Each structure stands twice: as structure tokens, then as C-alpha cells.
Image (cartoon, rainbow, N blue to C red; front, side):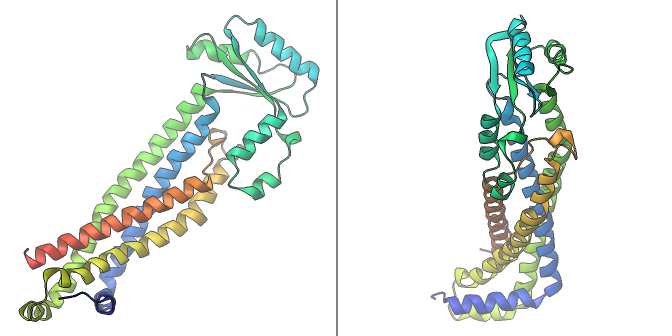
Length: 300
């Protein structure tokens, strides 16, 4: 028996409205679980973006004041070059123009933010790769430059990475665990919703099978119902991450709020990939939950 789109649409709509309370419970559970899952993934992307500053063996960065003089810059550079704990090829000076180019690359998906920034307000910096990897030695080395004239701040890679990773482990891992449990709950709710709908139509289904309807003819509307439930939940989750979670992370990335999240940026491409991943997970959960429910009921 051929499956017609109008039949699938009609039967799916009937199933979705048959038990509104249970359907809404399934959708809300999907919303919460997928929002937590997407938020945890975006936090992970933020961690990766924040750590990009310390690629290539760089262990700490000496940020200069945007208005520092050439004499102050030369003084810092001479002290770095004379220090035996700094590699001969381990000093990289990044001027304000280069910092601005890096800023545009990192925040290229936020053109409005880029338009408000000019090279003159960004700090130049020395990125240092020392000869040793001992955190205590590196920290002592970097602190020698904290009070030098023209220095704005000294940022240590191991401190930033450690603090960010610890924060992510406390927040992100818990988000993933909670989202996993809620996804399981959503799966069970979808399964029960489908089984209730099929039980309510058991007589009709028996008649359909008697007149030659295949199991797939009966299955498809219920599977589509499960997928639609999760897609609605995914749509709300995507909206939450786009208009609530992502702006909140952007606020955290401002060092005046919490210095630990400096550079903790989620780009538009990160957000888009996360949203697509959330939708894909939603389809899988909906398809699995409904398919299992239908198969058990049909006993095939």
C-alpha cells in the first residue's frame, strides 16, 4: 500500500493533538536537554578559541599599554633578549596593527563589534617562549615584567588554560551529564507518547492491517510525529542558544566582567555548527524513540 503525503500529514497532526499534555511534556524536555547540550558544546568552542593565543610554545604574553612609548617597548625587549630563560627565537612582537588583524580574525563574525574597535586602542604585546616549561620558573620570569613602565598586563598560558579548563570541567561536564539524562527522559517520553497514540488507535490499526496495510504504512506517521516533536524542541533550543546563551558568553568574554573568560569567544560559525548539531541530535532522538515504540507495538 503506497504512502501518501496528505495521509502522513493528516495522521501526524491527529496524533500530535490527541494527547496535548504528553506531547508538550516531551517537547519541553527536548528543549531543556538540547539547550544544555548545545551550551556545553559552545563552552568547549569558547575554550578552544581562548587557548588559540598560546599556540606554538608560547607560555606567557607581555601586554603593553596602548599608549606606551618606543623607549618603553625597547626597554622591555632588551630585558627579554638578555634573559637566559627566554629562547633566542622565542620573542615575538605583535604591534597594534597585527593585534587588530588578529582581532578581526577572531571576531570576524561580529562586524558591528569590529567596527567599534581601532588599532590605536588595542595593546601591542610580546609573546614569549621560554627555554623551560616549569610553571613556577615561567611564572617568576613573567612577573619580572609586571611592574615595568609601559606594561599593561602579563598573562600566563598555564594559568589561563588551567583556569578555563577547570571552569569548563565544572560547568560543561555537568551540562553534558544533565543533557544526557534529559535526552534519555525525552526519548522515554516520546516513546510513551507514540505508544499512547497507537493504543488509542489500536482498533483502527487492526482494521488497516486486515485490509492489507503494511507495517511501514502504519509506522511512518508515528515516526514523523516523534521527529516533529524533537524538531520543535530543537527550534526553541536553537533560539535560546542564539539569543540568550551566546550573548551571555559574549558578556563573559569581556575581561571587566570576569578576567578568566578573556578571549572566551563563540563565533558565528561555532554557533551555526552547534545549531546544526542540535538539530541532527533532535532528529536522531525523535526517530529512535518513535521507531522503537512503533516496533514494539506492532510486534514486528
